[in-house]
Length: 104
Length: 260
Image 1 (tube, one colour):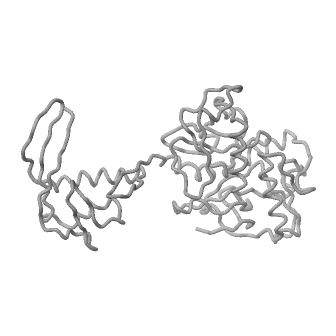
Image 2 (cartoon, chains in turn green, red):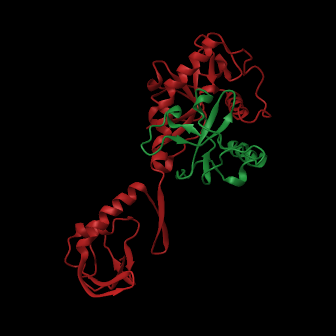
Image 3 (cartoon, chains in turn purple, green):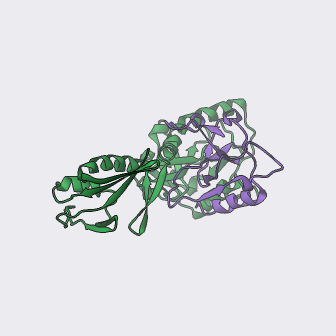
């Protein structure tokens, strides 16, 4: 989970959003949401509890969460990561990598 | 609002004087009339204090119409709204350079994707560079925030069945619908045959359309412009091109349930 402020988002309705780490070094994330209506031309992947690796437990998703995997955004540092949700399973992560090939 | 092509290089004054970026994706968000692109900011090597790191992609002088070497900062890649692209300054003219840049972008998440030789550097980051990068990220971040925030803020939506079509309504649509619904109260004529039951009150009401102005009718039926006829409680109502009702007047039995 990431602070909106770290992402430059000024939203009156929320202060934080799930973030999927695309790259640890440099630190790049893509922002997720469980309510955002994605554009028709977005390349999006949705993940729920079954997509998280039980061997690396975290707080989990509050509901099915969708990420536009073509968006990559830097954040200044790990201090902007509020808490750990979990790690995608190998299969779920492969979906991200495959989807990202359609971003171009 | 400019339409930018992949490989085009733009000035971004909102990120600072002289700020440049290269567009690396097709436009997205067109269905919302709010085009955005994934971009990579460009820097002269001297701006990066001569540090060419593993997340700085080298664009050679011959590969762009800028004519000098630039480093594409993958560590600062981000989505940007088209309206924040100010002027197209140059473009990448070598397809291989654009393909290598794509590979470098994918390489960030998938290290098994190889990147052309000499594109990425090996320099270690100094504290000065880290601080400078943090400043640059902070300078560009509000622009990406603009690309993300409205979409997230207007995230709520719902579908309704109108005739045979499921129509999507955004938060704003619902606000409009709510105000239209209040306005439609004028369409309800007299309440007849009230009935009370356990926990519910039932009413039959007559709706008289013919005596209302076209403005009121327009308000009531403006949920979706595609539909020029509606079915209310089994009675078909047609609206002509001026959004006035073709039918003069007829009764509609409508049941209203209210929790006691």
